[in-house]
Length: 108
Image (cartoon, rainbow, N blue to C red; front, side, top):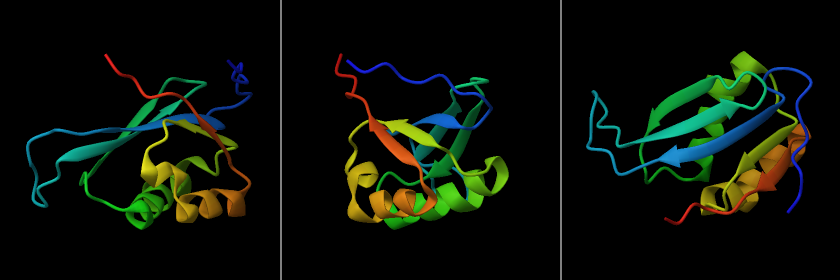
């Protein structure tokens, strides 16, 4: 098991995951949230989305609604969801110098 580096500033290292299985709601019938949690301050950001969104949608949502406000992350910690391991997502993060760290998924 690898030790995760502690951040030196807010929004340097974030945890990212999905909350799914929600009933449709809102004017666009959102049924999921993309969640970011800052490792330094523990501040969460919840973005309404659709569980069927693809990696392109995830990248645009991340850039337009989070990175434009927080700045570019140095490390994103997530599970191995196909959207987070896709070539598009991986290349997008490499472009910005963001390291992707993968954890194991929670299976109760």
